[in-house]
Image 1: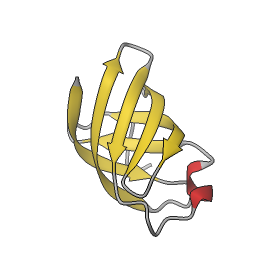
Image 2: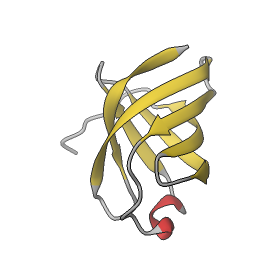
Image 3: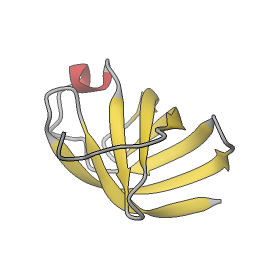
Image 4: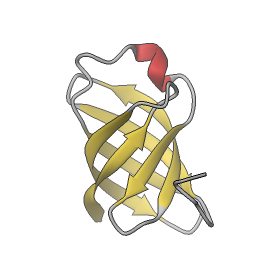
Length: 86
């Protein structure tokens, strides 16, 4: 299991702090959970790509498959290179 802290950037550009847990983290396929408070977030924010910025500097492009007010179930793929300032 791969876990840590980071932030997600939603469709609107808004960032939320998260804890992440990936049970599957192969080269091109990651599946797991984001632990994040989404109670005040419009569900349409999850209808497009969600970008996870991991604490180690890597980024993962995610699709949300399910969510509650406390967590999101996600699948995704890591991005090769990412410039957060761009």
